[in-house]
Length: 172
Image 1 (tube, one colour):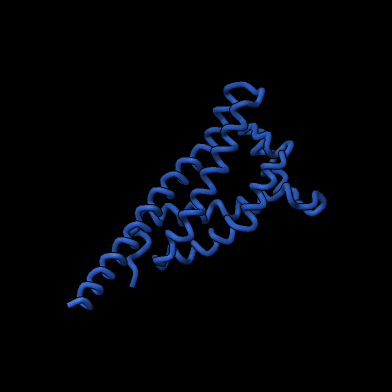
Image 2: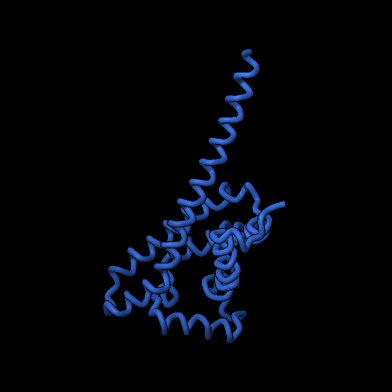
């Protein structure tokens, strides 16, 4: 039986992050894909809060690359996050296989957005506000990428070591 999620601090952080980010993805990010007529008022209010608080222009005029990033949320990120909710609780050995590319995509898309808004003609304070929103995603995805790389490397090394031992026994 796997150790409790509460004793696996990194997995607990990922579980909490996915539990919060997954609903927000559908409530805010994906609004750019929904027909305006079906978006409920509370979701519009969340979007306007984001725009007013963090000055996020990606939600005012959605550029084509950002729309592509949203589609990556629909087609890849959301399914991986949904699967990971259970996989993290049961300490699935498949986590690094799913979360390594996930972390890479999050890092690349977030870094792209941060690079883009650094050139916007907006006050420095607005860029700082945006960084308080995007920065944690960049940091967490970088941390997750390193963590999953190490986990995957450990699995490969363990398997390679076991194969080498089995191979040397066959030679005797």
